[in-house]
Image 1: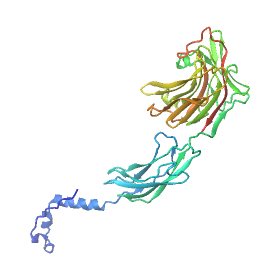
Image 2: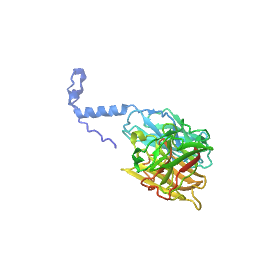
Image 3: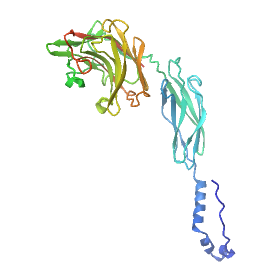
Image 4: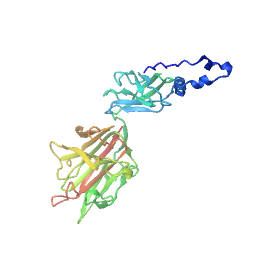
Length: 389
């Protein structure tokens, strides 16, 4: 806004006669005028803020739903007017127009603020099989002092082709460097289940290169096995493949699933649960994929997969989960049957480490209890678990 001209009131010449030692003329100038002039001088002499060089490691997963990586940029002190920061990007191993959108633009740090973000959009590229990188260059600034600098950004490949961990169950016994036994009935495990979990070789054992979890009935008592990788093998993102034969029968409830490793601090369901596979024994041709989470209390969503013929107890099938940032996809024998994203579930707790759980439950709220048609023992046979990242 233009500054209005100041009205000057003529003063007697005598008032400015410093030779006479007379300063009364200065005192005659209005105090508000002196303050205004001083403020103008101060404003004009205020130093420009400096742009702080951005440091750190920046990356984005190639299939991130947002598709944009944001590089923060800051000035050392709040500016008294907006600051424009100009930036561009150049190839390292990533290619503009193929891996990311070429950019030569600017962002504005508003008056009184110190921070803005430089956005660069990632392009989905299914042919990419490894990480790729590009540089973001911060070139100049209007309204601030800038020493140009560059920041590398990595596009993280999520084809998940690298085997990160597996258990082929080809040893003589369960590898306790990978697995924990969970024991007891734990008041029905929250589902009014009947089984007592043990570490007995009758319930959990290795046979012919397979892990076997066997549910046994002894009178009115049911024993079974439940093993976890908690605090031993935890993962964030990747592809899980589990090849298994499932049990059947009313009240039999096998599951291959995951829980957030922060369950001990935040509890369930805030930790998030991913059920890769669940089966109700009275429906041996049908499996379920489900997630459980907290949003003002327990919530869940899921879907199911039905065999066109036969049952899951008659032979091996591969149960897979592809776990990407903000995105989960379920498969049976390579056929996708369910997916969920952070757009579907805004309270998305599955971008943090999770561990695996394998168990065969007996009875409970969902499957109901065994009846006269249920034969024992029943067992889940697992050929392998493989985790790719």
